[in-house]
Amino acid sequence: TNAFGMGIDKSNVRFVIHAQIPKDVESYYQEAGRAGRDGLPSEAILLFKPQDLQVQRFFIDQSEGDDEHKQRQYEKLKMMERYANTDQCLQQFILNYFGQSGTKPCGRCSNCLDDRESVDVTVDAQKVLSCVVRLHERFGKGVVAQVLAGAHNQRVLSFHLDQLSTYGLMSSRRQRDITTFIDFLAAGGYLETRGGQYPTLGLTAKGAEVLRGQAQVFQKTAQKAEQHLEVDDTVFQELRSTRRQLAEQQHLPPYMIFSDKTLKAIGSAMPQSLDELMAVKGVGQAKLDKYGQIFFGCPAGD
Image (cartoon, rainbow, N blue to C red; front, side, top):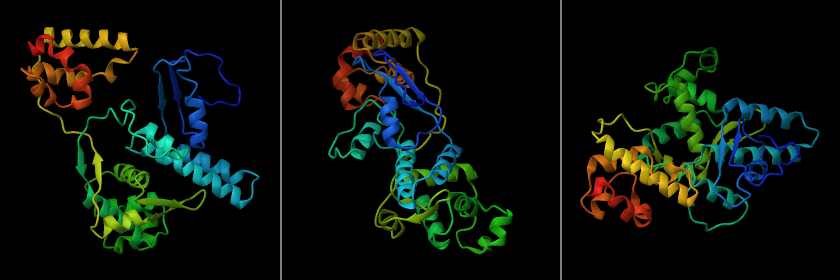
């Protein structure tokens, strides 16, 4: 959706989907806020690709405002980019942006519901941060990723960047994955973008601490394929039925109660106590308190 100032006079909008990144958090907040005006749970989904940012920077650069106004718009776009890449609670991010500090994670957004494990990525972060420093903070994330990947293109070779000690340090990873990791570091405040339409990367004080070994960096990463869980289909369907009934009663999407993956884990583990149910990956204390007794009464807990 894009607002275009028209407004949508409906209270029961259940989904708002952005097919590209808005120019600032204020616009996103207003547009996403069109969902759920009747007070019932709704979903706002943001889809974007790096080219969207370049388009927005072009619009800012071509606007009629003075340099100070353009710089403010670049800063707003930078915060929107951070929102799109952060692993922080999304509601908490927005509230903090508008000055409401001290808020707790909402427990409902896609980041809060992400049950992947956080892994220590400090070493990889140090490689990226070191590369930015050795490039004297004069290049953007594209060149940084090329250097780390060990690219042999004309730009890298013409600037003799293949002579840097960080050249090829992450050659085992795809260049686009390195770029995504750089976005993650920027969203976490370890790096910052500087400049206008063609921003360069710079090290922040937070990033400098990591580079000196005084702080660690953790990231939720995609898990390797796990061994197939043997789950009785009758048990799984009973668990899904219980979840569906709860979702209807609470006006929630089913996945916000438990994902299919978690239901399969429950069915495979066949917990004999609430403590054993708590040990199932994807349950957690909050969901155990809310739904533990209900799901423990299903066949998986009998």
